[in-house]
Length: 148
Image (cartoon, rainbow, N blue to C red; front, side):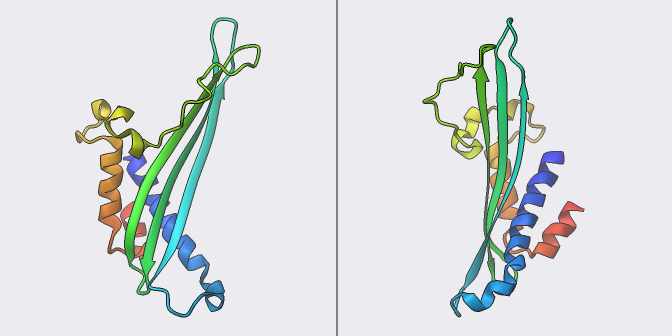
């Protein structure tokens, strides 16, 4: 439930960022069918390396992009996340594969592995897609009401 609220909050932030730019409207072309908003929520964590094992640094980025129509309704929404993890030795040398890409949770699909812990039987990317589909047609106020 906490992750659902976080994802809905990201959508709300993305929509709100569109309306925060309304003062710049005079600088934009007169005819724009939609506006685009992007929200990023980041966190970082880590553990120290010891003689017994590698340390790890981790950065998590959850993001949502939305387009909003002139009447304030969400036209489209994409939600994704990246978990970047790097392991290092006690000597400070990176022990992770430096050439390995950091794939997003949508790119990983079933390879992310949330399905086994999901109470609703859906992988992370399926849940994110369902939330993105749910907010289409809603306004920022309506999304905020769902998250409260």
